[in-house]
Length: 152
Image (cartoon, rainbow, N blue to C red; front, side, top):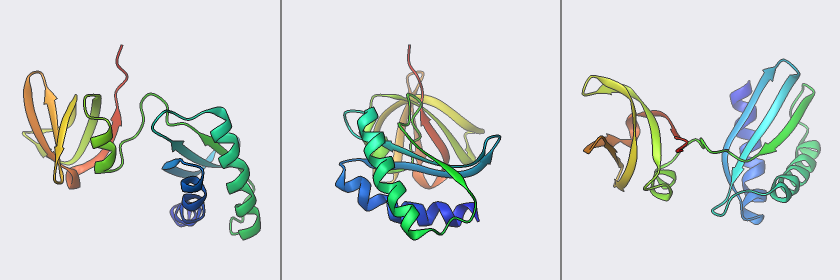
């Protein structure tokens, strides 16, 4: 159910966000302590402002009210991805070349499934990560989860 609702919300939200010059990073629909939460994580090249979140929330909220396909009461939250932004596509990896990332893979590569290193580049469907002076090539289809790492 939650996955189906997330996909329906994504279909409604994408055109609105494109019109506002924003990208959709992630849709989460889940039960939390306070009740059901529909969370849209948005971003743009120069970073997301409070005004961006407000505009997206207003526009998407109105469309969701019109479509009315979510049976439970829920809270709509629209926010930025934060410093540890998820990396969901090859375009994300390309955009953040030079940044530190944590990547988890479906299958072990060299006996490991979790890697933290600097994104050197992308090549086709491969992410090239620099870990301690060594390059590691990770096929994108092997990535189960990835996020930027906060650097201090």
